[in-house]
Image 1: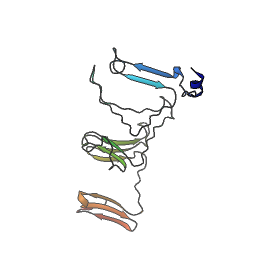
Image 2: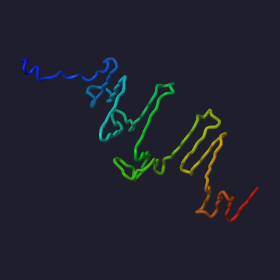
Image 3: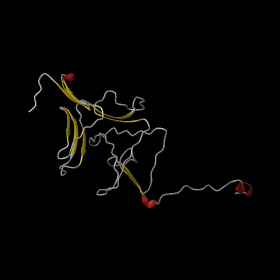
Length: 193
């Protein structure tokens, strides 16, 4: 290299490299390097991994060969037995979770989402559970095919409002209304035992 060219150049600083022992790659089957195998691709990295882009999409289509596997995307944080794993999701406008055959389920950008939305098709359910089966105060809220069930088991269930609480059926034909001024019961027949 000539002195003129050498003095006109600066050494490029190399980006930090991960320890080679900390990076492992397993390539199997066609589509991930060729050769025999089940087509799986696994990447391990002992460090912080980030993906930054204007938009990011994850899409699973399922596997048809050699044996069918359903489409699956899973997120896992923390080792088995640990209690410090976290998954944090945040959006400045909205988050929507849709399951099943939902006609208007978004597959891309959707400005109508404002807040948090959870929706299923006609044959799916929504279940929220706190505690495990061994906990006598295990609480459950179940949106199922028959209706909505709320069960506090040995724990308490509290519904509270500063203005009004109203329970109504059949479009309000029978109802119980609680307000700060009193309780109003309406219906074709009212029985108090």
